Image: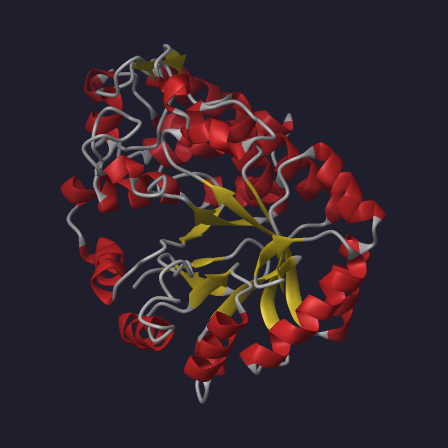
Length: 381
C-alpha cells in the first residue's frame, strides 16, 4: 500500500480507502469483512456518510480492539429520521445526530468530521448562518473531531468553503468525465447523458482551479465517485470509452491535492481490485490513450500529468514541473510549499534543451517546451 499526507492535517493516509456503500450488505456483515480486508491490505482510511444506525453500530463493532488502526471520515448533518437518511441543516438535529453517531461507533473522536453534502452557495450560507460551522469548530476544540471537512460536487461552492470556512479536508467527486462539466447546484447534471452528447473541450477551469487552490492551501482531497458510480467501467458508460479501475484511480491521484480514493466496494474482491493499483504495472495505470479517444472531447493543449512525454534526455520530471507551474500561476505568486517541492526535484525546467522529443510523445498536443521555459522563468532555474 502507498500512503500520502492528507493536506496539512498531519495524517498519512492510504491512497486507497473505503467508501461505505457496500458495508450494509449481507445484513450489515460486510462491515466486518471490509475492515478485516482493509487491515490486511494496509488500508487505514474510510468514509462513513450513511446515517443508518444499524450500519453505524456494525462499523463500531468491527472497530473494536483496533480503533487506532483506522482513520474515520464520518459526516456531520447526515442523520436518520423516520426510518430513512436525511441531510439536515437544523442545528439541534445535527447535534443529536452527532451524539448518536459517536455512541454507535463507540469512539470518542473522529479523525475528520465531514460537513455533509454542500452543493449550493445558499446551502453554504446556511451552514455558516445556522451555526453548523461554529459547532464543527467547537467539536474540534474539544478534540471530538480532529479535522473539519466538507463534501461537495460543486467546485465553486467547495472553493468558497475552503477559502472562507477553514475547511481542512474536502471530499470531492473526481474523474475524467465529471472534470469536463461546469459547476452546477444539481449534481445529477454531471452524469446526465445529454451533457456528453455535445463537443466538450478540456477540463472545466473551475475544477482545475479548485484542485490547485486546495494544493496551495494544504487542503487534502478525498475522492468520491472515481468510477462515476461504475459508469466509467461499463460498456454503456457516459465516456463512450471504457476505462479500467486502475486508470480511474491513476487519473484521480494525479490531480493536485488528492490524497486518497474512496471506492464504494460491494465485496472484498472489489476492494482488493482497487488496492491492487499499488502493485499494478505502469501500463495498467496509463489513462492517456483512453482519454485521448473520448468521443466529442478535445483535450488539446491541456497537460493531463500522464507522463507520456517522458523519458526526458535531461531527466526532467516534466509532469511534476508542469503541475508546480500551474500551481504557481493559479496563485499569481509562488507559494512556499510549491517552491520547496520544485526545489527538491532532481532536475529543473532550466535544464531543458528544447529538443522537442517530449512533444512528439504527448497525446494532447501540449506545448511542453513553452511550459518548461515559463517554469524556468517563474522559478528562476
